[in-house]
Image (cartoon, rainbow, N blue to C red; front, top):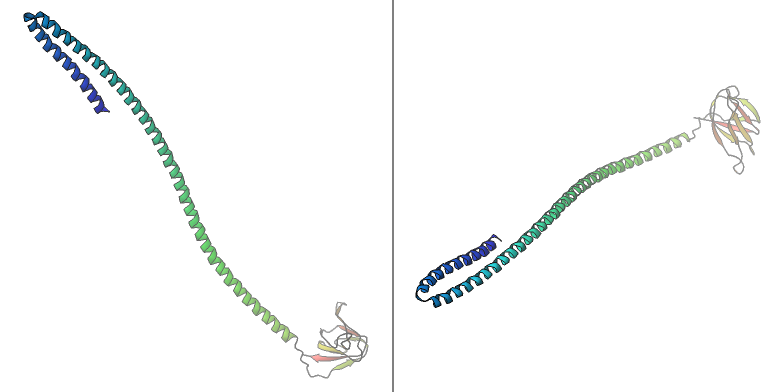
Length: 241
């Protein structure tokens, strides 16, 4: 733009200098010729004035063009500056948005990393839990096997080899009529009700002995001194270990 102004100004200045130079020359020439030939000098001066008038007109046109060009350039510069400011504002907004998005992205990456670490830790814990559950299952099986073995051993009936005792229907005092201990009661005949009362007076054993179709064919029980045995039919007691 400065070069444009320089070219226009130089052009106007050159035209002005040319007009002054021409006027000086023709004035000198006209003066000289006026001494020799007044008529010729008058014609030459008229032409000179016309040229000056034309030059002045061109000068005015150039000045108007320069002013218009300057105004147009100033308007263009103003528009460009405004556009630059708008662009800078948009750029600042884009930078701010980018910064926010970058912060959000970095935070999301941290959360994902924490989640992955937590999932890995959870996977480790889950494996430990699975191993522990497997161990518990194994222990439960061992306990179950031991309980079965204990039950089996407890239920083993081993006779002492002592002579079984037979009792008619009636009531008998343990420790007086027969010793305390473990016995197997077996019905003699059809069988009947068989009860053992504890020292509290309540029935610790209350069952029916029979032939299997009605009542039990045998019944294993423990008794202590002071208990009372009651049977409604003949019964045989076999001492057990």
